[in-house]
Amino acid sequence: MTDEHWLNVNDVNYNGVFWCNRAFARHMLKAGKGSIVNVGSMSGVISNRPQNRPVIAPPTRLCIG
Image (tube, rainbow, N blue to C red; front, side):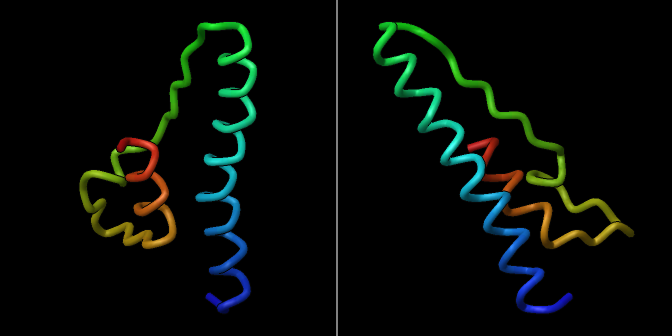
């Protein structure tokens, strides 16, 4: 994986979650109610062997909290 690809994937995975949550949070604050549910896979909690996917685990863990 090239550095450029790594940075692009992580930009989408990390910043995408943040920007979407921020955009929806603004509407929910204005409405005075709402919920955000971020969904991730088990890859954020366990290591799926033999599928070593270092690009997937950190942003998935971010969604889990």
